[in-house]
Amino acid sequence: MNPIENHSLTKFIQQTIPFKEIDVDEIVNSFHSIKIKKGEFLLKESQISNDYFYLQKGLVRTYLYNLEGDQITTDFFTENNIVFEVTSFFKRVPSETNIQAISDCIGYRISYEELNTLFHNKPAFRDFGRAILVKEFIASKKRVYAMINQTAEQRYQNLLYSKPEIFKTSPLKYIASYLGITDSTLSRIRKKM
Amino acid sequence: MNPIENHSLTKFIQQTIPFKEIDVDEIVNSFHSIKIKKGEFLLKESQISNDYFYLQKGLVRTYLYNLEGDQITTDFFTENNIVFEVTSFFKRVPSETNIQAISDCIGYRISYEELNTLFHNKPAFRDFGRAILVKEFIASKKRVYAMINQTAEQRYQNLLYSKPEIFKTSPLKYIASYLGITDSTLSRIRKKM
DNA sequence: AGACCTACTTGACAAAAGGCAAGAAATTGA
DNA sequence: TCAATTTCTTGCCTTTTGTCAAGTAGGTCT
Image (cartoon, rainbow over all chains, first blue to last red; front, top):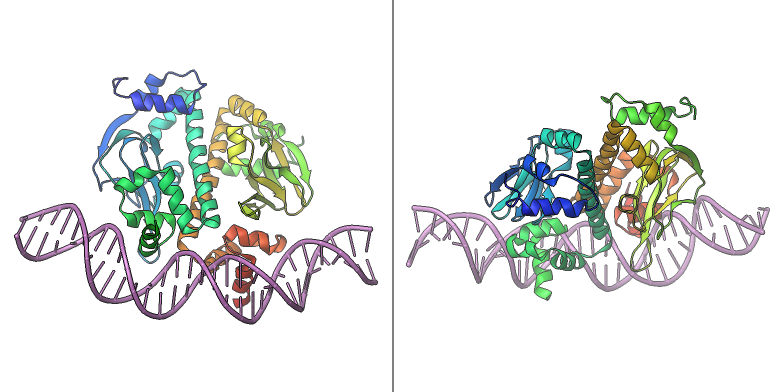
């Protein structure tokens, strides 16, 4: 794998653990380039997730079904982020969540085993793994806080401001369930603006 | 530090990483016994968190203030769990969150530096750190899902079932904000039962 | 182009939850 | 112990959001 091709992943790793002396090329070479077409899946429910995925281009969502059978979009992943389903990937249990491409995507994946080998061979890279976990955990906590404290309208405005890319590509119904509201309510919020 | 005294922390570590061959005594000896009286703080906002805390006995909450100046309880920690504020502790930034004892507490703490020394000297113990992060992250994701999908009444019932200890000790107003509702609404939900 | 989807909007009504204020109950502290 | 404080409940009314159903708009496939 050519380091130049991997420019964005190399950069991403270096930005995530900036003070680590680390052989990024060897790490990047352990990843495998993949493409996912719009609508296709990186993970389907009941599978055990085996992909730790760096999303270089495109938009991805995770979703699951609630008891009424409706799809609930639990997360959006934008470019230059790591996509993974923490429960299934790290606990090695079947996933309840689906990971689906909303647009055509390209990026680099690594398996659970390969990732652990990498952690073993490159101890400093463990800090990358931790940093990603911490980052996503913090994002989830912020989301809980937003759900407690903010109105649907505020959550909409914040998402529009913080991840405008989503609105260019994602159907509004995905965004509605992500915000914890119905399509109708989202439509009414948008009408007001 | 006497291993017998640390029985519960030893057990907790062994349960968390059951298949690891690891010298738990040496790890446990790196922790320091502490007591926190009801109402006292393990962390106050604007401080940089330096405690990774195993809670042996007691009940702890984290809270912060919203823009209206109201306290929002973001989490409860029950016995036999690790208490930490992920943002401040791992990113070494001032905390926006307070960590407060709801009842008299006892447990064992370790500093950020000591924990990293331990991770360095006992690589297998890193898996413990990861497991705790993963566990709390999963809990946070479940909480987001509950906020999106469940009514206040369902969230109340689930909390009552999953963490009944909280109801024995915590004021209802803490529980109300944790559930994302007002005191009044919680009171009405309870009346119905 | 035309038929078929799916996404999105809108209206009328219903349900869930909040705001505020008063009062009751429980806890705390001197 | 008893006053002060805090916690909890309740009533009345408002706001927010949901449900359901109908209709519009836009894309897609042949």
